[in-house]
Amino acid sequence: MATYVLNFQGLADYAQHFASGLALTAELAVAATAGGVALGIIGGIVRNGRKNLLYKIWTAYVELFRNTPFLVQLFFIFFGLPELGIHLSAEPAALLALIVNLGAYITEIVRAAIAVTPKGQWEAARVLGLSKWQAYRKVVLPPAIRKVYPAIVGQCVLVMLGSAVISQISCEDLTYAASYTQSITFLSFESYMAATVLYLLLAVIMRHAMLGLGKVLFRGN
Amino acid sequence: MNIMTICSLQKYYGDNHVLKGIDLNIRQGESVAIIGQSGSGKSTLLRCMNGLEDYQEGWIRFGNMLITSDEKKAREISRSIGMIFQQFNLFPHLTAAENVMLAPRLVLGLPEKECRTLAEEMLEKVGLGERMDYYPSGLSGGQQQRVAIARALAMKPRMLLCDEITSALDPELVGEVLKVVEQLASEGLSLVLVTHEMAFARDVANRVVFMHKGKIHEEGPAKELFRHPQTAELEQFISRARAGL
Image 1 (cartoon, chains in turn blue, orange):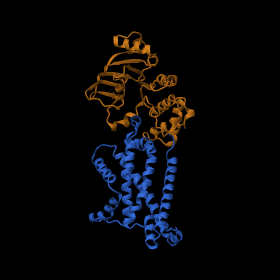
Image 2 (cartoon, helix red, strand yellow; image 1 turned 180 degrees about the vertical axis):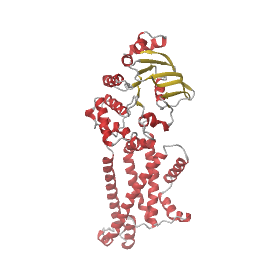
Image 3 (cartoon, helix red, strand yellow; image 1 turned 90 degrees about the horizontal axis):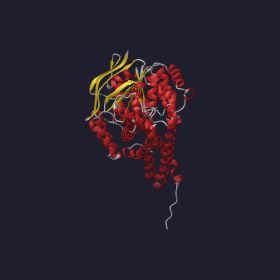
Image 4 (cartoon, chains in turn brown, yellow; image 1 turned 135 degrees about the horizontal axis):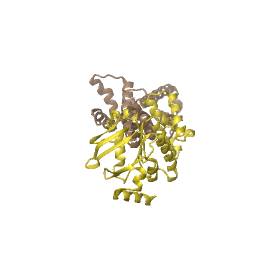
């Protein structure tokens, strides 16, 4: 019976690759979260508004990005956009793909949260003279986002994990580091196990950091 | 002097003819109670008075201002007419003081400090000076409704609309809210109250308007009207309300 002896020592020379890969994955996660959540909040408002052209465009965008694979979206942005005269290098292309993908999902989460706001909240804001925008910003959005905040956090973590495929367009992220290492050392089990642990850590830290931030942002009931 | 004039007001919800030609004047400093069965159109009429509902025919004037449901008018209306709701509609993520400060800050553009002082003053007035920094979830229904009153008063309205403001309260909490409203009436704020509290309508309102099937069926001085109803419908309504008390 053949026994397999784990050899993590063999990865030592490639620690630097893992570290820089982890850094890129983390950086993209932070930037994608910021961009995607902002895009999603705007989208949630647009999708609760009048059924004008912007509403229709946004609806089409949400449908498109929620019903196609992320990898295909990434390829479209990296290989397709140059055909339209928009040239992006790998990392900006990956970030853009992550933001628009996350933005589509967050749009639907925020849309639902806004839609269930009691009518009385809108009416109270209106009779006090608040503009529509002031009502959104000060009255409707804070409790709405608070309500769905755990779902938003979950989606952001999911997108961070999904970012593993950006190594396909040669972004040197954590998955890329693992692939590269194993292709040279043939220590595939160890390489991907290291990547798994690092993804797990990153996901747990990200979730707790975001939930902690939520506790600071949302007071009251 | 009339503060509000309503003339031949007609309102439809689709095919449903809700208000069938309402003529009503509200005088400066007067408190008017609107009573009537559910579905008689009393809340709808009240909600037309500050543009929360649109109407199809007739007109409503407040001073020189034509009241319509146009969103662009809401800010101008809010400076003159306040409203309190059955369900309080406090903002749950803001403290009592922040609820009161919000509109003066955003709509009137008063400086933060002044808003805080104003909130203090208004909450003091409704007996909640000690509860400034409580969130609505930490307040009883009666206290929440009093915060809502303070919030409306902070805009210094000339007229206050009250839409069944005690209907969602436990019976033992009704009194504290009505006491505040009574005080406002005695201070000369013009009030229009849609209410199920017959005793309150009788004791606080100068005038009572009885609505029936989308029309003003009968109106008159409060005590007069309750003592000597002129129509069978009002008589029946009053006796039913008594039986319920």
